[in-house]
Structure formats: C-alpha cells, structure tokens
Length: 264
Image 1 (cartoon, rainbow, N blue to C red):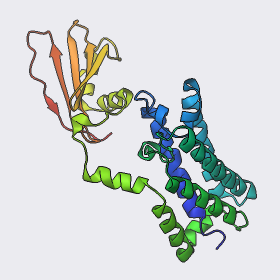
Image 2 (image 1 turned 90 degrees about the vertical axis):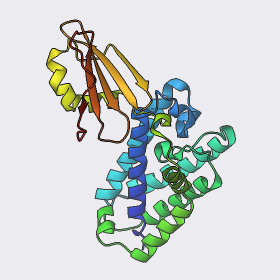
Image 3 (image 1 turned 90 degrees about the horizontal axis):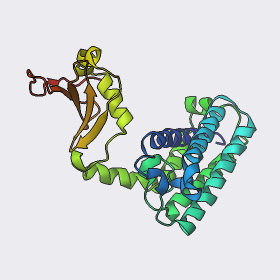
C-alpha cells in the first residue's frame, strides 16, 4: 500500500518535465513564459532559467524514485510538492491571470482550487511513499490496482487540464489561427525533406536570409550560387509536412513543386 502511489508520482513528474522542456523550446519567443508557473514570480531575465531548474528537479526526482529506494528522494518529492502548493497559492494571490504551468502550455488556465488541491494530494502521496520498500520500478511491475486506481481518479477530478484538452479536441482552431512551431523546429523539418536534399548543394549558405509565415505555410528564402532566390514553403499542418520549393529570378522558374510528406 505504501508504494502504491509511486507510479502516479513518477508518471506525473515525467509529464511535467517533458511539458516544461517543450515550453522552454517553443514558448519563450511567443511570451508563454510570462504567463506560466513559477516563471511569473521572477524577473524576466530569470524566467527561462526558473523553468529549466524546475524541469531538472522533476527529472532528478523521477530518476531517484524509479531506480532507488532511498528515502531522500521520497522526502525530496514531498518537499517539492509542498513547495509547489505554496507557489500556486502565491500565483493565485499575486497573479490570478497566470496558469500553474504544471504540465506546460496545457496548464495555462488561471490557478484554481482544484490545481492547489492536486498538489496537496500529491504531497500526501509522496509522504505515504516515504516508508515504502523497494524502488519505484517494482511498484510498476507489481501494482496495487485498487489503491493505484483510487489515486488516479482523485487526481483526474482535480486536474482542469483534462477539460482543457477535451475542449481543444472538440473545437480545434483552423491551421491559420493556431500558433506555429518555433522557426527552428520548422527549419529542422525542412532539412529532413527531399526538397532540401535536392537543392542543398546549390545553396550559397545553410541559413536562410529571410523567413515569414503566411496562413498555414512557413517560407524560408536562401540564395544559390547563381544569385537567385531559392524559396522553400513548409506546411504547418500536421507532423509530416508537405514541402514546396521554387527558384525565383531565373528564366526557367517553374511553379512550386510539391514534395511528398516525410517522417521527421
């Protein structure tokens, strides 16, 4: 029974780590850090570092809970959850418009009592596991289903993110109204495409001299060795983008050919 909630703690901390890393990669340019979690309570120049520290702490706790039975990691997890409760109370008092950032961008809704109640329950779960024997992976291998499911149900009831995800799934915005991936992410997708491989050798530089977005497309402009513009268009719809390319300024310019989506 004492170890029954270790899988829940490990999974939630892992999800929080991954989500925060995603926000760090894509959210700073869009101003997401200024509206989310502990980053709101620190000066602008420290917001990214604060979120990185939070993600690193969660990752360290996950590793410790999963592979060891050291009480240090159990008590540290309890302290982390208790501190999270305090941070959420401060957010609710000082910045009622900010989200908790517990699970990245999906936790962008203003902090409510459900989110605070969830961290209180997680603090209790971590405290209960402090006296458990064996590492966390044993709890995954031999779960106590009745206690595990009870914990999952309680946390699900206290997680507003579930409603947020359901709402987004029902009312998904058109592609042109969605926030696009970071430019670096789209550029990585371009460089894995057949269009890039076909034209790479003719480009004067590997970095674009200009880029812009139009509706569901991100455009990247390069110069080739003949001083012509090579413009790539990468679709922002889906994870397997369509890529088009055209050489602009040459007499034999042709309409943008479509390259088949590729796995990235």
